[in-house]
Length: 389
Image 1 (spheres, rainbow, N blue to C red):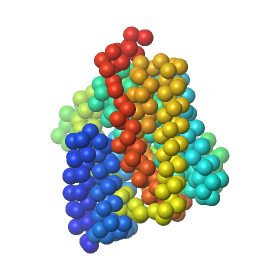
Image 2 (cartoon, rainbow, N blue to C red):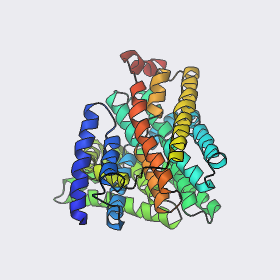
Image 3 (cartoon, helix red, strand yellow):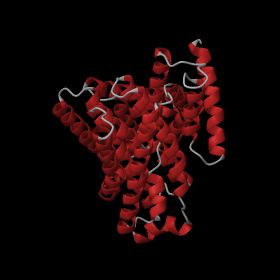
């Protein structure tokens, strides 16, 4: 099938199934992956994954992750990182370590395959969690910002581990380079916030010119691409560069009005094209795993869904974050884009098998459907964190 025809079919299937799933208050990403699975070699064999579709998916992923970065601010992380770190550890770090050990010692997977599969199925997704936080009216609440900060820390750790396995030469150099980059990012962000008025005024003047909006939008994409290339050159995934580049773009830099225009534009591009295409393409590579891999899937789901949920609930009771333990577990257990990204990158670099990749995607779909059902946010819960301040 010609690539344009394949995109037409995948986009149509992804949009329809995504809307159907959202109508029933389920994660759209699960429907999009399911659409690719059905159209791919595993079921109907109408569309087969190939280099052209993979290249288009890479472009789509760049814009998806760039927007995720824009929706996260360094100030949000700085405000709640002390509480976010333990939540990241119990909801992601401990279950991922247990799953990696299980895959390595019990199911005899290699070190890279065990680690990356465990991380992919265990990492929460900023794209899913940020939408859930926004939908429940917690975006400006400390409890909602804690959930986002926790997921950002987990996602960042997952991307770093992925990148280290993609090119493990010079690991200490790469860790030093990313540490310097993160420190520079936070310092730069603080300086931009300090001189925000002048920076915003300059962007406003440029925006008022005839081609200002186009220039600004193009410049932001160029910044994202440069950051992506930088991370690729030092041996990390370009995804990490796109994420950090997005974090630079805040209302303190471009102003609230222009930031709204940028995010709405990227949201429309992502929702209308990039997201359904990316996840349906990801679904094409899912195969029906052998019988032994169903046992792997059940074991991984029990660890990340059972142990991770238990530890998160327990910590939530101890720290009293302004959300019920069930709601906290529901937010931090939600899976989606990030896990699929990591699994896809690992598959393209031959770090995991198609069977293990399929286990990860099937697990992601199940968890994406399951965990949001635990979220029960009442008005009192939304106000509790503010009252605590």
